[in-house]
Length: 185
Image (tube, rainbow, N blue to C red):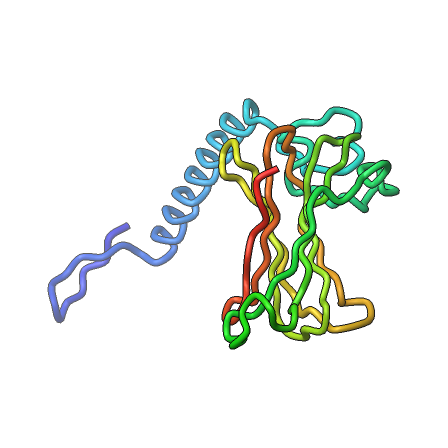
């Protein structure tokens, strides 16, 4: 029903009619959105998070990249070993190459899971640090950042794993005064 405003001469609909039309529009839009969502989600692949157990059972980038080697009972830790270890010296040290070592960076390998991960161990440094592991084949990497302490629980940091049956390398830095990478192995 239309109502005419005598003063302005403008026609408008009765408020209850407007509300009814708005409800119909919203319901129709909701139904269309629901149908569209059902159509696209029905055929969508289901993503799963990488896990150490899945990685150990069937090593691949999908099962291993981003998984924690120590998770699931340490499935990927069994038989793992350090492939490479090297010291990192602060850039600001006047005796660069002969000064105090800030940290030691390690590249770990799991033959069970065919994965690598990086580990940084403080050798006196306390502060923010990031450890990386890189896969040479496609440049993919994993990283972990946190405060590194000179001793105690936080004296070592680990990155997540990368499936890397080919060459990989570990790197670490503090974002300011020191950093470095090992060789591709």
